[in-house]
Length: 396
Image 1 (cartoon, rainbow, N blue to C red):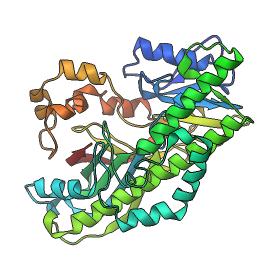
Image 2 (tube, helix red, strand yellow):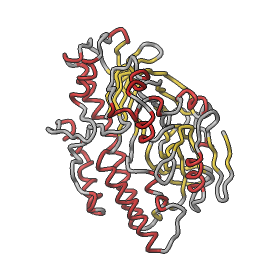
Image 3 (cartoon, rainbow, N blue to C red):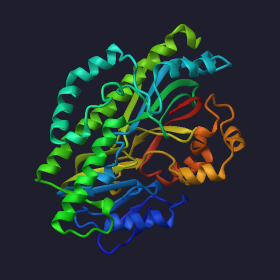
Image 4 (cartoon, one colour):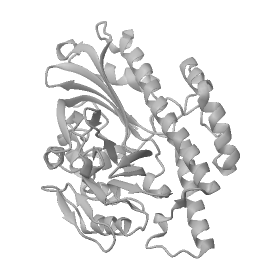
């Protein structure tokens, strides 16, 4: 762990042996200059440039929240479910397995054409009523496609994977967040914070670090909205897992009968929570970071062709009980599309049943940092419980 002293608050960075580019360092220093930061800013080994704050940051604050640090994919995270299947139960040709998942999990900008009963029930049990209050306080957010996108994946780096662990057990893994509703909530409050500080004449080192102040109506509305979005995201992952498991049990997947095993992980990695650290009650924003309290299970995915990890937190107070959320990008999406070829993608995803076309070129493994180096850099934050390799990957 490196300590970087800045003018206001120090930065503690778990970056030994991994890339930490100058633009990301500059962003971190700007975040550390915010007057309401508590103690220090923690930087995870998957750190890379984001909007306002770096992805891979843990930002504790007192009396304020920066909406852009939470981001627009509020509640984005991972769910991992161990199955009673074994590696030898999987067919040699995994195209049927991939197709079965794709048939029930809408990807990209898609929504359910006919909303499943499981989605309707989940929406009716609290989410719909709470969302009506969110829209009442922020009418621009709207109700467009909110129920229809519950139980859908989205695009970008979101995915569903079939994986095999070090013992030969099969896992089903999903990565997704709060879809369009979370995006609209995030954008609304980022812009609202900017307008409010401009009205008050507050000067910012970066307009995307505009904050909302505790005790104001805007702050209270944001906390309610972000809490809803985080619950929506968690429910979204749970529903996709239900649908994917059901699909794999179907005849088309060509798998033997199986059940869910006891081990399951469902963790956010873009969110804000109220926690106590270094003697104070603070708002902890984890922007591309997972809570790693003592004994807590988390999931750290690699890229499409790299290993992923089920981890158990060590509760390190210096990281605000956090760890990385993945490998972290080493190339922007634009750079990856310019530098990498389809031949690179096919070579790097050899042995994985997945898309191998230009639409996912920016998700090629070499666009990301070496996940093994990332894991070594945070050896004092988590303990590896299971190491997984992908055999099927469905991309958004």
